[in-house]
Image (cartoon, rainbow, N blue to C red; front, side):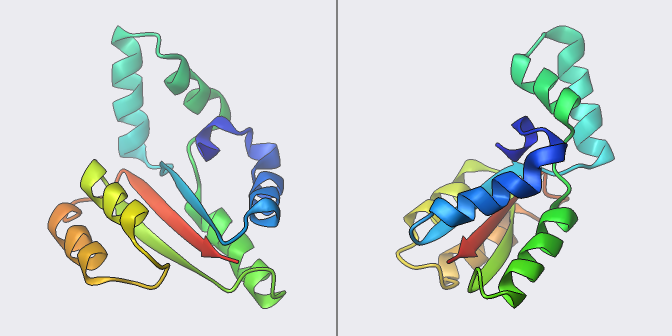
Length: 129
């Protein structure tokens, strides 16, 4: 959903999400890559999808920018930890959602190896408070 937030306020939104979260924040969004932009433009040629139009208006997500912000928040003690997972399909998302704790698990690692051999279209950030 970060791709639907204007870039000018994304880091403020991230800090707000972390501030109101009880235990963790999970951010799943399409990466800002040439392949993703090309794929979305291809779809927009055939359908005026309002969500993809927002992606174009606000830009896809630069995860390096978010990770830099998380590094700072971790140094300041605002968050304990964060992890990045490649996420290209529903099975990996379900594994992330069903995980009992935020520590890494075999099923997530196995799903990542099995399903993300190619360039991931989305990344999932799991941020522990």
